[in-house]
Length: 422
Image (cartoon, rainbow, N blue to C red):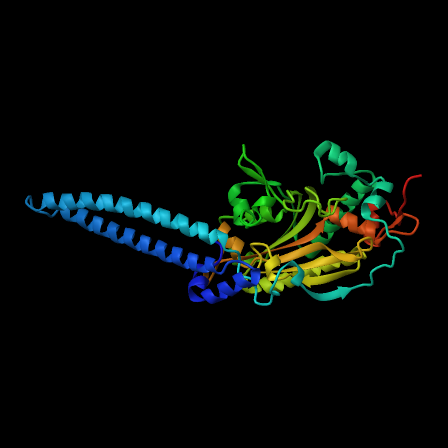
């Protein structure tokens, strides 16, 4: 069983309690887990002791005298029943431990700001936000360009669905091609990942705890729709013993993503910023634990490079502990400027999940020092729908046309402007 390292919990429970407080969680979970761990270890020791006695008694039957044998056989029967009971208690203790263990999120990095969603720290602001007089929002622009159709999306699928049509469809393909070309240039392996995964994969990546309400479940097939290809990419090497010499392993996965958006009623309901389905290119890395922090900075640098290719003004934020996902120890977001909203909005994020996911998914690496659990990290390279929304909003021109960043032009037939049809 994975999740946070139980040795860390036993050796430094105050560190885990501090993480829970920083996340706004319940520090009492730490004591529940310690008690469950102790109960399981006691149950294992009792079962082991009884099995050893049972084996000793069974072995003594052969050398016993006729007078001794009835008593020994009676004791053997008692021990058989006791072992069965002890093994049942061990199974129950292990299940209790697992339930509490899965409820405890990863230990937040000491550097992560304390607090909730509003308590992030801005690390850097890059570029000058464009000055747009009476800016239009992305939906108005996209509708005029015949690029986005939310009315027909709602007619066909319901609220928070959409069609990308004409230049909108071309924009998606251009962004995917640019993202995959950069991933290839950086040495990542391109992957087209499945959007449906088994429960153990979804649970292993930490999405069936606090975020379970966000996940679509296909009950008849016992499969889940992913909210990010991080899930499939994390499961890619589950239950595998990798070679440490092959690390780091880096992937760029493309998949459709599905989110129920539970609890977001009325929030970003207009347009394609917060939707139930979108496509995304996601980076994922398996590294040695001691290399995880450097890898985190590397993923952030690649995200920044991509945002700069799109010629967007942005800021980098250090997400507060209370706004981290279950698996993340630390997370950096890149937020780009939306003129129509007069604010920065998240376009990408990258998380260092340390060994949290790999423990759940049983992913280790073999080295001369022995087998070691690996660390996993993820980073959004391009969430397509939201990025299209930002491109339209950020690069809008006074006449309703939209400037095309130079890096995208090769995939858009050389267009320098997107112009509404006459």
